[in-house]
Image: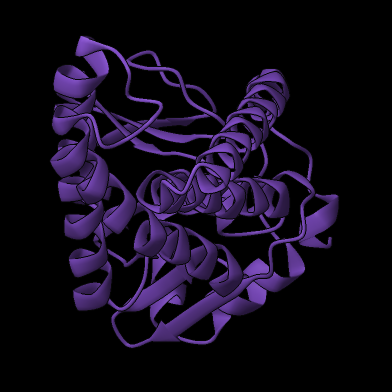
Length: 257
């Protein structure tokens, strides 16, 4: 069965609304920033224009990445070696997110430094000049940290399955849990709001959440069934260190019970 033909877990259907809302909101805010930037340019305040256009560019890049995922246009990318099977995000998704961070950082730094002095036109309230500037500084710091982490790890994240454990890496964190600690693999989280999630429920009552599975594989269902299959069938886990796991993934040969 093709990975595109695999059935979606039932709980994923409700995630479509969240995707549409996020996309519409990002595009609307980007449009507002573009207007603010153009108005500032007509007044000769090019610092405000640069900040507004930088934030708009980040939102456009974010929207393009969301649209790529939402339309199911992501491409499968994985690596298999003697240590395990690594499923990687679509490179285009990673590039869009990293480009967004690159343009976000100088705009946020400029706002954090200049807004308290009234140099940013749309920061015309005390709250924006203080709390807003502080928030922009935090955003810039997190974005820089994300870029550094991505550079060190060689990408925005991955999911790696080995015979002994599951490793989940995103732009900021790395989490590892052993198969023996997993008591269930489900399609929704109890601990937080998620979209197209692969949720590992652990013996200690906690959850490990692989969120937005469709950044890794088209529509994401294949990642869910992949993880669930190897959880349900420990006898098949040695496939993860040879060529059999990529073949199973390519063919969609999973236990979907």
